[in-house]
Image 1 (tube, helix red, strand yellow):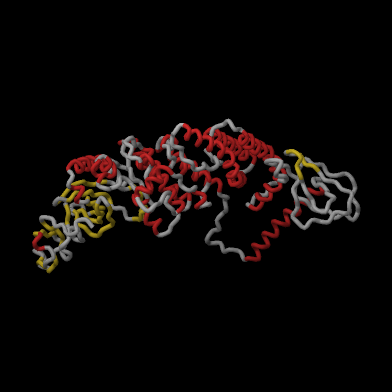
Image 2: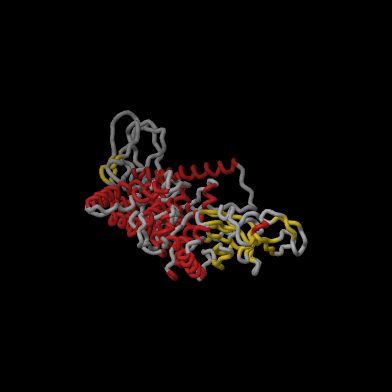
Amino acid sequence: MIGRGMLMPEIKFSCMKCGSEIEAETTLAGKVMQCPRCHNALKVPDECMVPGMVLGGYTLEKMLGQGGMGEVWLATQTSMGRKVALKILNPSLSKDKEFIKRFTNEMKMVGMLDHQGIVSAYEAGNANGFYFLATSYVDGETIASMLESGKVFKEKEALEVVKKVAEALKYAWDKYQILHRDIKPANIMIEKGGEVKLMDMGISKSLKEDVSITMTGIIVGTPYYMSPEQAKAERDIDQRADIYSLGATLYHMLTGRLPYDATSAMAILARVISEQATLVRKLNSNVSPECEMLIGKMMSKDKNQRQASWQEVIDDIEETIENDNLAAPIIPEVPENIPMKSDWLMKAGVILIIACFVIVSIALIKRGENRRAASSDIEVKDDAPGVDSEKKTDSAPVVKSKGPPRVISSRAQPSVQEQPADVVKEPKSPAVEIPDTSRKEPGKGATILSELADRGLVLSEKEIEKVAPILKDYYRDLAQLKENRSATFVEKRDKIKAIVYDTKKKVESKLSKERAAILMKYLDDERYQKVHDILAPAQMNQRRLHQRTDTPPAHATMPAPASTHGK
């Protein structure tokens, strides 16, 4: 604890009864004296920093935290009667005149910052040999304390917080070229009203410029969230270092785990420089592929592969949030003043839906949209995409299948040959044609429709006819891209984005927004492994190229599928 055992030339404190400011010589420390105003008996503090002490016009109330730079106290500014957060520098830093000069100049610049997302700096000064910085007091909780309590943020909640931090950092960089250099959960505060505040702007920059400070063992920035270029002590640092740190913070918020961890600071820095963080979705499967791609880009080892500006970061975050909103099925909320129906009524509703489906299926059968199969078990095999082949047999009558109705091609013509009287007819669901992704996956169309139905989307015959050609083109384009061995990693990634964007627009032109969102969300989930298979070979080629040229490899986090619901 700084100041413990170090006495100022004079001890200033307040009377807890009348509030008057009292000055006492250090020789009276720990002794009892009488308040000159109210004559209340009180004890003179025997420590430098204790509640009731006065420092440069600020009365200390309680300690909020402490670290390598010093202590942070909740205090009251006597002249203004307002609460402030008072940062008191460690005496070891206060002895360095050059550092204090840079610190003071930096604080003047930070004092010019006027943004709702940045904690305001009121005053930088010194009193009785102690340098301090008074900032606005934020009544809230840091992201760090939330994570320590076991909280794992939901994707949209975390993205909204990070977006506000990015907006604050954009303002500081665009207007004053100010870097933070120590972005971490402990420096992001959320007020009780929900506002996000970024703390400690500029302090770490002053530390960075002092080589002797680094040599004493005070780490500039926090190793867990530090960018590779900071870990290498490179001098050419720009806003992309802060972008990395914010990405690492988002990683921690969504997984509840640090991107890198080790038993010592040097070991952590070594991992930051040379190792790849575990993929976000391996730690939290609820995170969307788009969000994983966002984090992977922000945390790229090569700063040239990160977003080039804060505006680009903000745009990527907004696109990810929009994708998340479109991907979620819209479920109407039940008004609070309407009581919930009983369980039997809910079950009746489910039965009614099933009955309607069966009735529609029977109606389609009567219209001639089914085929009869004459085997013990009905199978649908595609000889080519979009073409169905039919197995015929003259064996015994067909036994009715116990499984659910199978889906067949809408182009298949009903058999005109009369069946034996003892053949049991099997009702079939609407005939459809959905393209197979490959010859090794017969019946893919039926699988798609079945899985979509499980998600609450039952396509009508007309809707199937509209989207089938779109999906056929979609799967064909992905297959062709996978076979393209000459395309680079970046070219394939951009092509995937274009394919998905084009598919999304076409689907939205055929279905309602809500139904299109469900279909595209299905394609999102199903496409994840396909994208991995497409990009992995290109990424391996990229790594080999870097190794041959002795260039450090780019961040190897596998980008997730391209945005399905882009702007």
